[in-house]
Length: 218
Length: 218
DNA sequence: AATGCAACTTGAACTAGATTAAGAAATCAG
DNA sequence: CTGATTTCTTAATCTAGTTCAAGTTGCATT
Image 1 (cartoon, rainbow over the protein chains, first blue to last red):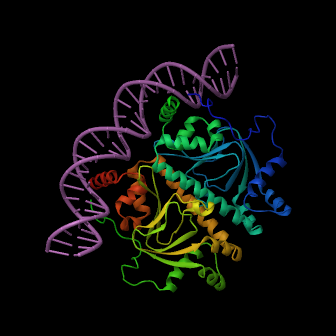
Image 2: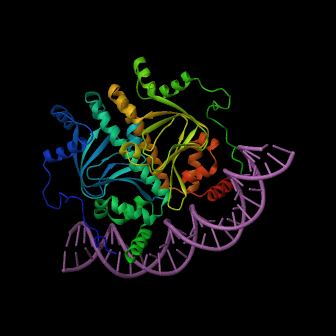
Image 3: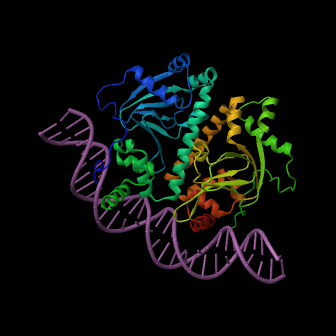
Protein backbone atom coordinates (compact mmCIF):
# COMPACT_ATOMS: atom_id res chain seq x y z
CA UNK A 1 0.00 0.00 0.00
CA UNK A 2 1.47 3.32 -1.03
CA UNK A 3 1.34 5.88 1.70
CA UNK A 4 0.01 8.83 -0.23
CA UNK A 5 -2.61 7.00 -2.17
CA UNK A 6 -5.89 8.11 -0.65
CA UNK A 7 -4.95 10.63 2.01
CA UNK A 8 -5.24 14.33 1.29
CA UNK A 9 -2.60 16.61 2.74
CA UNK A 10 -4.60 18.99 4.86
CA UNK A 11 -1.95 20.82 6.83
CA UNK A 12 -0.53 24.04 5.35
CA UNK A 13 2.15 23.67 2.69
CA UNK A 14 5.51 23.12 4.24
CA UNK A 15 7.65 26.22 3.96
CA UNK A 16 10.47 24.13 2.56
CA UNK A 17 8.21 22.99 -0.25
CA UNK A 18 8.01 26.51 -1.60
CA UNK A 19 11.78 26.80 -1.29
CA UNK A 20 11.64 30.04 0.63
CA UNK A 21 13.12 30.14 4.10
CA UNK A 22 11.33 32.09 6.74
CA UNK A 23 12.98 35.30 7.69
CA UNK A 24 14.04 35.78 11.28
CA UNK A 25 11.05 38.03 11.78
CA UNK A 26 8.60 35.44 10.47
CA UNK A 27 10.14 32.74 12.68
CA UNK A 28 9.67 34.94 15.72
CA UNK A 29 6.12 35.62 14.65
CA UNK A 30 5.35 31.89 14.68
CA UNK A 31 6.39 31.41 18.29
CA UNK A 32 4.66 34.63 19.39
CA UNK A 33 1.48 33.44 17.67
CA UNK A 34 1.79 30.13 19.51
CA UNK A 35 2.08 31.98 22.83
CA UNK A 36 -0.82 34.29 21.97
CA UNK A 37 -3.12 31.26 22.12
CA UNK A 38 -3.07 31.50 25.92
CA UNK A 39 -1.68 34.86 27.02
CA UNK A 40 -1.41 38.38 25.68
CA UNK A 41 2.01 40.03 25.62
CA UNK A 42 2.69 43.74 25.10
CA UNK A 43 5.51 44.86 22.77
CA UNK A 44 8.11 45.15 25.52
CA UNK A 45 7.28 41.67 26.82
CA UNK A 46 7.53 40.26 23.28
CA UNK A 47 10.97 41.80 22.82
CA UNK A 48 12.07 40.60 26.24
CA UNK A 49 11.01 37.06 25.43
CA UNK A 50 12.49 37.06 21.91
CA UNK A 51 15.82 38.07 23.42
CA UNK A 52 16.20 34.67 25.09
CA UNK A 53 15.52 32.59 21.96
CA UNK A 54 18.43 30.77 20.32
CA UNK A 55 17.79 29.71 16.74
CA UNK A 56 19.06 26.31 15.66
CA UNK A 57 18.88 24.54 12.32
CA UNK A 58 19.27 20.75 12.39
CA UNK A 59 19.89 18.17 9.71
CA UNK A 60 18.08 14.84 9.74
CA UNK A 61 19.61 12.68 12.44
CA UNK A 62 21.22 15.55 14.29
CA UNK A 63 20.99 15.17 18.07
CA UNK A 64 19.73 17.90 20.38
CA UNK A 65 20.03 15.95 23.63
CA UNK A 66 22.24 12.90 24.16
CA UNK A 67 21.58 10.07 26.56
CA UNK A 68 23.30 10.86 29.85
CA UNK A 69 23.48 14.56 29.15
CA UNK A 70 21.60 16.87 31.55
CA UNK A 71 18.84 18.79 29.75
CA UNK A 72 19.33 22.52 30.18
CA UNK A 73 16.98 23.61 27.41
CA UNK A 74 13.51 23.30 26.08
CA UNK A 75 12.62 23.65 22.40
CA UNK A 76 9.98 25.20 20.23
CA UNK A 77 9.78 23.59 16.76
CA UNK A 78 9.56 26.28 14.11
CA UNK A 79 9.42 23.77 11.26
CA UNK A 80 10.27 20.09 10.95
CA UNK A 81 9.99 17.18 13.36
CA UNK A 82 11.93 16.03 16.40
CA UNK A 83 11.55 12.87 18.40
CA UNK A 84 12.02 12.02 22.05
CA UNK A 85 13.03 8.37 22.36
CA UNK A 86 14.55 5.83 24.71
CA UNK A 87 16.71 2.77 24.04
CA UNK A 88 15.85 -0.36 25.97
CA UNK A 89 18.28 -2.92 27.33
CA UNK A 90 18.06 -4.83 24.06
CA UNK A 91 19.18 -1.78 22.13
CA UNK A 92 15.73 -1.22 20.70
CA UNK A 93 14.49 2.35 20.19
CA UNK A 94 11.09 3.43 21.52
CA UNK A 95 9.67 6.76 20.44
CA UNK A 96 7.91 8.39 23.36
CA UNK A 97 6.93 11.59 21.61
CA UNK A 98 7.21 13.38 18.31
CA UNK A 99 7.88 17.09 18.25
CA UNK A 100 6.36 18.37 15.01
CA UNK A 101 6.06 21.93 13.76
CA UNK A 102 4.68 24.42 16.29
CA UNK A 103 5.18 22.09 19.28
CA UNK A 104 7.23 22.43 22.44
CA UNK A 105 9.49 19.56 23.43
CA UNK A 106 12.15 18.64 25.94
CA UNK A 107 13.16 15.85 28.29
CA UNK A 108 11.21 17.30 31.18
CA UNK A 109 12.53 14.85 33.78
CA UNK A 110 16.16 15.72 33.17
CA UNK A 111 15.29 19.40 32.76
CA UNK A 112 13.44 19.62 36.09
CA UNK A 113 15.65 17.38 38.22
CA UNK A 114 18.94 18.40 36.57
CA UNK A 115 19.92 14.75 36.30
CA UNK A 116 21.32 12.91 33.26
CA UNK A 117 18.70 12.26 30.59
CA UNK A 118 17.47 8.78 29.95
CA UNK A 119 15.89 9.91 26.70
CA UNK A 120 17.34 11.28 23.47
CA UNK A 121 16.12 14.16 21.31
CA UNK A 122 16.99 14.27 17.63
CA UNK A 123 15.64 15.44 14.28
CA UNK A 124 13.78 12.99 12.05
CA UNK A 125 13.84 15.43 9.13
CA UNK A 126 15.61 18.76 8.65
CA UNK A 127 14.28 20.93 11.46
CA UNK A 128 14.47 24.47 12.76
CA UNK A 129 13.96 25.20 16.45
CA UNK A 130 14.18 27.90 19.03
CA UNK A 131 16.18 26.73 22.01
CA UNK A 132 15.34 28.28 25.38
CA UNK A 133 17.80 27.88 28.21
CA UNK A 134 16.43 26.93 31.59
CA UNK A 135 18.24 29.78 33.32
CA UNK A 136 16.74 32.28 30.89
CA UNK A 137 13.28 30.79 31.29
CA UNK A 138 13.48 31.06 35.10
CA UNK A 139 14.29 34.74 34.72
CA UNK A 140 11.41 35.23 32.31
CA UNK A 141 9.05 33.65 34.88
CA UNK A 142 10.21 36.35 37.33
CA UNK A 143 9.98 39.28 34.89
CA UNK A 144 6.81 38.18 33.06
CA UNK A 145 4.80 36.02 35.49
CA UNK A 146 2.02 35.49 32.94
CA UNK A 147 4.30 32.88 31.39
CA UNK A 148 3.44 30.74 34.45
CA UNK A 149 -0.09 30.78 33.08
CA UNK A 150 1.06 30.04 29.54
CA UNK A 151 2.95 26.95 30.55
CA UNK A 152 0.28 25.85 33.03
CA UNK A 153 -2.21 25.78 30.16
CA UNK A 154 0.33 24.22 27.76
CA UNK A 155 1.10 21.49 30.29
CA UNK A 156 -2.58 20.90 31.01
CA UNK A 157 -3.13 20.33 27.30
CA UNK A 158 -0.10 18.03 27.20
CA UNK A 159 -1.51 15.98 30.07
CA UNK A 160 -4.83 15.64 28.25
CA UNK A 161 -3.05 14.36 25.14
CA UNK A 162 -0.90 11.94 27.12
CA UNK A 163 -3.88 10.65 29.06
CA UNK A 164 -5.66 9.99 25.79
CA UNK A 165 -2.60 8.13 24.55
CA UNK A 166 -2.29 6.00 27.71
CA UNK A 167 -5.98 5.15 27.49
CA UNK A 168 -5.64 4.07 23.87
CA UNK A 169 -2.45 2.13 24.44
CA UNK A 170 -3.99 -0.08 27.09
CA UNK A 171 -7.51 -0.36 25.72
CA UNK A 172 -7.58 -0.59 21.93
CA UNK A 173 -5.70 -2.84 19.48
CA UNK A 174 -2.84 -1.60 17.35
CA UNK A 175 -4.95 -1.29 14.19
CA UNK A 176 -7.35 1.12 15.86
CA UNK A 177 -4.47 3.10 17.33
CA UNK A 178 -2.91 3.41 13.89
CA UNK A 179 -6.15 4.74 12.42
CA UNK A 180 -6.46 7.27 15.24
CA UNK A 181 -2.87 8.35 14.67
CA UNK A 182 -3.38 8.97 10.95
CA UNK A 183 -6.43 11.12 11.61
CA UNK A 184 -4.85 13.02 14.42
CA UNK A 185 -1.40 13.62 12.93
CA UNK A 186 -1.71 13.64 9.14
CA UNK A 187 1.31 15.91 8.87
CA UNK A 188 3.58 13.54 10.77
CA UNK A 189 2.16 10.61 8.80
CA UNK A 190 3.11 12.28 5.54
CA UNK A 191 6.62 13.22 6.50
CA UNK A 192 7.97 10.58 8.83
CA UNK A 193 9.09 7.04 7.87
CA UNK A 194 6.70 4.30 8.89
CA UNK A 195 9.22 2.57 11.09
CA UNK A 196 9.18 5.60 13.39
CA UNK A 197 5.40 5.65 13.47
CA UNK A 198 5.42 1.95 14.40
CA UNK A 199 7.86 2.68 17.21
CA UNK A 200 5.64 5.49 18.52
CA UNK A 201 2.64 3.15 18.44
CA UNK A 202 4.58 0.52 20.34
CA UNK A 203 4.47 -2.09 17.55
CA UNK A 204 7.01 -3.60 15.13
CA UNK A 205 7.40 -2.20 11.61
CA UNK A 206 6.44 -5.60 10.20
CA UNK A 207 3.20 -5.63 12.14
CA UNK A 208 2.39 -2.10 10.98
CA UNK A 209 2.96 -3.28 7.43
CA UNK A 210 0.46 -6.11 7.96
CA UNK A 211 -2.06 -3.70 9.43
CA UNK A 212 -1.70 -1.35 6.46
CA UNK A 213 -2.11 -4.22 4.03
CA UNK A 214 -5.23 -5.38 5.83
CA UNK A 215 -6.69 -1.87 5.80
CA UNK A 216 -5.90 -1.53 2.08
CA UNK A 217 -7.79 -4.72 1.34
CA UNK A 218 -10.91 -3.57 3.19
CA UNK B 1 1.09 -16.13 46.34
CA UNK B 2 -0.21 -14.08 49.26
CA UNK B 3 0.07 -10.37 48.70
CA UNK B 4 1.48 -9.32 52.06
CA UNK B 5 3.93 -12.14 52.47
CA UNK B 6 7.27 -10.52 51.92
CA UNK B 7 6.49 -6.86 51.48
CA UNK B 8 6.88 -4.44 54.36
CA UNK B 9 4.35 -1.66 54.70
CA UNK B 10 6.47 1.47 54.46
CA UNK B 11 3.91 4.20 54.08
CA UNK B 12 2.60 5.85 57.28
CA UNK B 13 -0.23 4.11 59.06
CA UNK B 14 -3.53 4.91 57.47
CA UNK B 15 -5.46 7.34 59.65
CA UNK B 16 -8.44 5.08 59.44
CA UNK B 17 -6.41 2.26 60.92
CA UNK B 18 -6.01 4.15 64.16
CA UNK B 19 -9.75 4.84 64.16
CA UNK B 20 -9.31 8.56 64.62
CA UNK B 21 -10.70 10.82 61.92
CA UNK B 22 -8.75 13.88 61.06
CA UNK B 23 -10.23 17.09 62.30
CA UNK B 24 -11.25 19.70 59.79
CA UNK B 25 -8.16 21.66 60.72
CA UNK B 26 -5.85 18.71 60.11
CA UNK B 27 -7.45 18.01 56.74
CA UNK B 28 -6.87 21.61 55.70
CA UNK B 29 -3.29 21.32 56.91
CA UNK B 30 -2.66 18.37 54.59
CA UNK B 31 -3.67 20.27 51.46
CA UNK B 32 -1.79 23.40 52.56
CA UNK B 33 1.28 21.28 53.14
CA UNK B 34 0.88 19.83 49.65
CA UNK B 35 0.72 23.34 48.20
CA UNK B 36 3.71 24.52 50.25
CA UNK B 37 5.89 22.15 48.25
CA UNK B 38 5.92 24.65 45.39
CA UNK B 39 4.67 28.05 46.62
CA UNK B 40 4.51 30.03 49.84
CA UNK B 41 1.13 31.41 50.92
CA UNK B 42 0.58 34.04 53.60
CA UNK B 43 -2.24 33.59 56.15
CA UNK B 44 -4.78 35.62 54.18
CA UNK B 45 -4.04 33.64 51.01
CA UNK B 46 -4.39 30.37 52.94
CA UNK B 47 -7.80 31.44 54.31
CA UNK B 48 -8.89 32.63 50.88
CA UNK B 49 -7.96 29.29 49.35
CA UNK B 50 -9.49 27.18 52.12
CA UNK B 51 -12.77 29.04 51.60
CA UNK B 52 -13.25 27.39 48.19
CA UNK B 53 -12.71 23.81 49.38
CA UNK B 54 -15.70 21.47 49.61
CA UNK B 55 -15.16 18.42 51.77
CA UNK B 56 -16.58 15.11 50.54
CA UNK B 57 -16.54 11.66 52.07
CA UNK B 58 -17.05 8.73 49.70
CA UNK B 59 -17.80 5.07 50.22
CA UNK B 60 -16.11 2.38 48.14
CA UNK B 61 -17.69 2.41 44.68
CA UNK B 62 -19.16 5.87 45.02
CA UNK B 63 -18.91 7.89 41.80
CA UNK B 64 -17.50 11.43 41.65
CA UNK B 65 -17.82 11.88 37.90
CA UNK B 66 -20.14 9.92 35.63
CA UNK B 67 -19.54 9.12 31.98
CA UNK B 68 -21.16 11.85 29.88
CA UNK B 69 -21.22 14.34 32.71
CA UNK B 70 -19.21 17.54 32.20
CA UNK B 71 -16.40 17.85 34.78
CA UNK B 72 -16.76 21.08 36.74
CA UNK B 73 -14.40 20.13 39.57
CA UNK B 74 -10.96 18.93 40.39
CA UNK B 75 -10.13 16.91 43.49
CA UNK B 76 -7.45 16.70 46.15
CA UNK B 77 -7.38 13.28 47.89
CA UNK B 78 -7.10 13.76 51.65
CA UNK B 79 -7.12 10.03 52.34
CA UNK B 80 -8.12 6.98 50.33
CA UNK B 81 -7.90 6.15 46.65
CA UNK B 82 -9.83 7.21 43.55
CA UNK B 83 -9.55 5.91 40.03
CA UNK B 84 -9.98 7.51 36.65
CA UNK B 85 -11.12 4.88 34.17
CA UNK B 86 -12.71 4.36 30.78
CA UNK B 87 -15.00 1.63 29.46
CA UNK B 88 -14.25 0.30 26.00
CA UNK B 89 -16.77 -0.79 23.40
CA UNK B 90 -16.67 -4.32 24.79
CA UNK B 91 -17.68 -3.03 28.20
CA UNK B 92 -14.25 -3.61 29.66
CA UNK B 93 -12.86 -1.14 32.21
CA UNK B 94 -9.41 0.39 31.79
CA UNK B 95 -7.86 2.29 34.68
CA UNK B 96 -6.00 5.29 33.35
CA UNK B 97 -4.92 6.72 36.68
CA UNK B 98 -5.18 6.09 40.38
CA UNK B 99 -5.73 9.00 42.73
CA UNK B 100 -4.21 7.96 46.04
CA UNK B 101 -3.77 9.98 49.21
CA UNK B 102 -2.26 13.45 48.72
CA UNK B 103 -2.79 13.47 44.94
CA UNK B 104 -4.78 15.76 42.68
CA UNK B 105 -7.14 14.19 40.17
CA UNK B 106 -9.79 15.11 37.63
CA UNK B 107 -10.88 14.41 34.08
CA UNK B 108 -8.81 17.25 32.67
CA UNK B 109 -10.17 16.96 29.12
CA UNK B 110 -13.77 17.42 30.18
CA UNK B 111 -12.78 20.04 32.74
CA UNK B 112 -10.86 22.18 30.23
CA UNK B 113 -13.13 21.80 27.19
CA UNK B 114 -16.39 21.73 29.16
CA UNK B 115 -17.52 18.73 27.15
CA UNK B 116 -19.04 15.45 28.42
CA UNK B 117 -16.49 13.19 30.12
CA UNK B 118 -15.42 9.99 28.46
CA UNK B 119 -13.87 8.84 31.71
CA UNK B 120 -15.31 8.01 35.12
CA UNK B 121 -14.01 8.90 38.57
CA UNK B 122 -14.93 6.76 41.56
CA UNK B 123 -13.59 5.55 44.91
CA UNK B 124 -11.87 2.17 45.13
CA UNK B 125 -11.86 2.31 48.93
CA UNK B 126 -13.52 4.71 51.41
CA UNK B 127 -12.07 8.10 50.48
CA UNK B 128 -12.12 11.71 51.65
CA UNK B 129 -11.50 14.52 49.19
CA UNK B 130 -11.59 18.27 48.79
CA UNK B 131 -13.58 19.25 45.75
CA UNK B 132 -12.61 22.51 44.04
CA UNK B 133 -15.03 24.03 41.57
CA UNK B 134 -13.64 25.27 38.29
CA UNK B 135 -15.30 28.66 38.69
CA UNK B 136 -13.77 29.08 42.14
CA UNK B 137 -10.35 28.03 40.88
CA UNK B 138 -10.49 30.57 38.06
CA UNK B 139 -11.18 33.28 40.60
CA UNK B 140 -8.32 32.08 42.79
CA UNK B 141 -6.00 32.32 39.75
CA UNK B 142 -7.02 35.99 39.51
CA UNK B 143 -6.71 36.80 43.23
CA UNK B 144 -3.62 34.68 43.95
CA UNK B 145 -1.64 34.41 40.69
CA UNK B 146 1.08 32.30 42.34
CA UNK B 147 -1.34 29.38 41.99
CA UNK B 148 -0.50 29.53 38.25
CA UNK B 149 3.00 28.58 39.32
CA UNK B 150 1.77 25.88 41.68
CA UNK B 151 -0.23 24.14 39.00
CA UNK B 152 2.44 24.68 36.34
CA UNK B 153 4.89 22.77 38.53
CA UNK B 154 2.26 20.18 39.49
CA UNK B 155 1.41 19.59 35.83
CA UNK B 156 5.08 19.42 34.85
CA UNK B 157 5.57 16.67 37.41
CA UNK B 158 2.46 14.91 36.12
CA UNK B 159 3.83 15.01 32.59
CA UNK B 160 7.10 13.49 33.76
CA UNK B 161 5.24 10.64 35.46
CA UNK B 162 3.00 10.02 32.47
CA UNK B 163 5.97 10.10 30.08
CA UNK B 164 7.66 7.48 32.22
CA UNK B 165 4.52 5.39 32.10
CA UNK B 166 4.17 5.67 28.32
CA UNK B 167 7.81 4.71 27.91
CA UNK B 168 7.38 1.66 30.10
CA UNK B 169 4.11 0.61 28.51
CA UNK B 170 5.60 0.43 25.03
CA UNK B 171 9.06 -0.79 25.89
CA UNK B 172 9.06 -3.31 28.74
CA UNK B 173 7.07 -6.50 29.32
CA UNK B 174 4.24 -6.74 31.81
CA UNK B 175 6.29 -8.52 34.46
CA UNK B 176 8.83 -5.71 34.60
CA UNK B 177 6.07 -3.12 34.71
CA UNK B 178 4.44 -4.92 37.63
CA UNK B 179 7.73 -4.91 39.56
CA UNK B 180 8.19 -1.20 38.88
CA UNK B 181 4.64 -0.54 40.04
CA UNK B 182 5.10 -2.37 43.34
CA UNK B 183 8.25 -0.40 44.13
CA UNK B 184 6.79 2.91 43.09
CA UNK B 185 3.33 2.59 44.66
CA UNK B 186 3.58 0.25 47.65
CA UNK B 187 0.64 2.02 49.31
CA UNK B 188 -1.67 1.42 46.38
CA UNK B 189 -0.42 -2.15 46.10
CA UNK B 190 -1.35 -2.82 49.72
CA UNK B 191 -4.82 -1.34 49.58
CA UNK B 192 -6.22 -1.93 46.12
CA UNK B 193 -7.52 -5.28 44.70
CA UNK B 194 -5.21 -6.88 42.20
CA UNK B 195 -7.75 -6.78 39.42
CA UNK B 196 -7.55 -2.98 39.48
CA UNK B 197 -3.77 -3.06 39.40
CA UNK B 198 -3.94 -5.42 36.41
CA UNK B 199 -6.28 -3.00 34.68
CA UNK B 200 -3.92 -0.07 35.32
CA UNK B 201 -1.02 -2.10 33.92
CA UNK B 202 -3.05 -2.94 30.82
CA UNK B 203 -3.09 -6.69 31.42
CA UNK B 204 -5.73 -9.25 32.39
CA UNK B 205 -6.15 -10.29 36.06
CA UNK B 206 -5.35 -13.89 35.06
CA UNK B 207 -2.08 -12.84 33.46
CA UNK B 208 -1.14 -10.81 36.56
CA UNK B 209 -1.82 -13.90 38.65
CA UNK B 210 0.53 -15.93 36.44
CA UNK B 211 3.20 -13.25 36.73
CA UNK B 212 2.89 -13.21 40.52
CA UNK B 213 3.14 -16.99 40.68
CA UNK B 214 6.24 -16.95 38.49
CA UNK B 215 7.85 -14.28 40.67
CA UNK B 216 7.00 -16.26 43.81
CA UNK B 217 8.75 -19.32 42.40
CA UNK B 218 11.95 -17.42 41.61
C1' DA C 1 -20.71 -19.57 62.27
C1' DA C 2 -22.72 -19.96 57.88
C1' DT C 3 -23.61 -18.26 53.46
C1' DG C 4 -23.08 -15.51 49.47
C1' DC C 5 -20.28 -12.68 46.76
C1' DA C 6 -15.95 -10.88 45.11
C1' DA C 7 -11.30 -11.60 44.23
C1' DC C 8 -7.78 -14.60 42.92
C1' DT C 9 -5.59 -18.69 40.84
C1' DT C 10 -4.88 -22.31 37.50
C1' DG C 11 -4.80 -24.65 33.07
C1' DA C 12 -6.03 -25.20 28.23
C1' DA C 13 -6.86 -23.10 23.97
C1' DC C 14 -6.40 -19.10 21.31
C1' DT C 15 -4.74 -14.62 19.30
C1' DA C 16 -2.29 -10.23 18.67
C1' DG C 17 1.96 -9.08 17.91
C1' DA C 18 7.22 -10.18 17.72
C1' DT C 19 11.05 -12.10 15.51
C1' DT C 20 13.66 -13.73 11.77
C1' DA C 21 14.87 -14.00 7.08
C1' DA C 22 14.60 -12.59 2.54
C1' DG C 23 13.36 -9.79 -1.18
C1' DA C 24 11.27 -5.47 -3.26
C1' DA C 25 10.86 -0.62 -3.43
C1' DA C 26 12.26 3.94 -2.32
C1' DT C 27 15.66 7.22 -1.26
C1' DC C 28 20.18 9.10 -1.05
C1' DA C 29 24.92 10.23 -2.35
C1' DG C 30 28.33 10.69 -5.71
C1' DC D 1 22.50 7.67 -13.89
C1' DT D 2 24.29 4.17 -10.82
C1' DG D 3 25.31 1.88 -6.75
C1' DA D 4 24.65 1.90 -1.83
C1' DT D 5 21.71 2.38 1.87
C1' DT D 6 17.39 2.68 4.03
C1' DT D 7 12.69 1.66 4.23
C1' DC D 8 9.03 -1.35 3.51
C1' DT D 9 6.74 -5.73 2.64
C1' DT D 10 5.89 -10.62 3.05
C1' DA D 11 5.80 -15.17 5.09
C1' DA D 12 6.94 -18.61 8.52
C1' DT D 13 7.55 -19.37 13.22
C1' DC D 14 7.46 -18.06 17.94
C1' DT D 15 5.79 -15.77 22.22
C1' DA D 16 3.46 -12.56 25.44
C1' DG D 17 -0.76 -12.04 26.75
C1' DT D 18 -6.10 -13.04 26.33
C1' DT D 19 -10.04 -15.64 26.99
C1' DC D 20 -12.72 -19.05 29.01
C1' DA D 21 -13.97 -22.22 32.43
C1' DA D 22 -13.59 -23.98 36.79
C1' DG D 23 -12.02 -24.15 41.34
C1' DT D 24 -9.99 -21.85 45.60
C1' DT D 25 -9.53 -18.22 48.84
C1' DG D 26 -10.81 -14.02 51.07
C1' DC D 27 -14.19 -10.83 52.52
C1' DA D 28 -18.72 -9.07 53.71
C1' DT D 29 -23.16 -9.84 55.43
C1' DT D 30 -26.55 -11.98 58.16
